[in-house]
Length: 458
Image 1: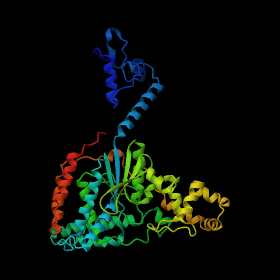
Image 2: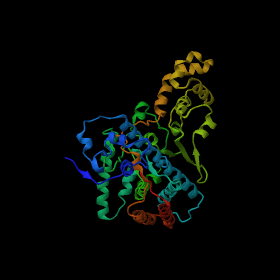
Image 3: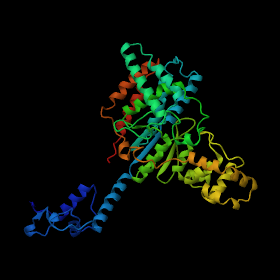
Image 4: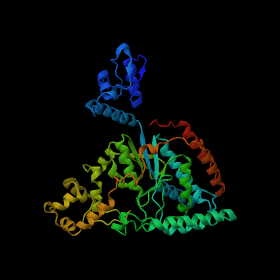
């Protein structure tokens, strides 16, 4: 079987191949003969300038020739060159919510919201959190995701109570059904069945705080933290709904902390050729810093966004590499996560030791080279605790796809299909819960964001 086609110039065929492969221009080093060998271009040697598309099929199979490999490499390099123009922004959603909560709490204490009656504090909180999200989105990322860790079971009773406040009989029936569903899913995940899977339609699950490998290794992990404020619990679901209405992916994975999800997405995005910006003040993310990964941290006062990268890390820690940060903190501990320090080792001592020996494991192997007797004794008696600290502090940035079923393509930042109508309707309804609150400014900011945004072409 063969098929003839009209006379086609070699230059047009080169263009056709490059267009089908997504290459702006096929390299000149590929001659017509080379392209014939790959099977991508039909033979041009037939009489009268006609070609047969089945010439490559009629010939004996040549296998994967070096030319095919080179052409495939060219496609891959071109894709990565194109992706360099894109930036992936990974946002710690829980941090944004807490940051907004304490800002609003401070203003309420100073009577800045004179018309607030206490019932709509959660509206002010999520409004402030969305304003912070918009501040970082105005930097123009091509891809974005907001990641959360999930709340503890101690506060789930408040969610149930709030759902039962509906006085309409129909709403009460729906609320009861939701409560039963929420409790069943929460209890299943609380006892560890199943962990680490995300469903295909929603890719979002709910699990109890603390059900992950770190709490199995160290039950007191994050045990010093206070219960989640009621205002945060009450507004968190509406905060997530608002993000989804803006067509922003909201990612939660059962049994996996948000830090590990961000770490995995960050590493995968860098492998795809993108630059990554992690929006979080958490120093655990120092481990990820590289020429392609920077942290964006909101200033403690005001809304200024501070960038923290390789240069800033070197100014603070000298010759310490970002990948060695976890080794240093394994000795100094982390009070935020209730990880104990190694008694007798100060921060300056830990920094010098890790710079000298490279890793915590190598340091413990070379204890005979340590001159300071008290430091040596502290390491000998607390070696197991130091190793445990490192396992708790190290980000798991290599989670498999079945646990974090998202690719960089899934995080594309694009305008909602409904042109923002769902967001406007949602916030018109939410504003009614807070006396005197208006969502016009927030809605106007979102509309302006879409007017200025250009969807990244993948």
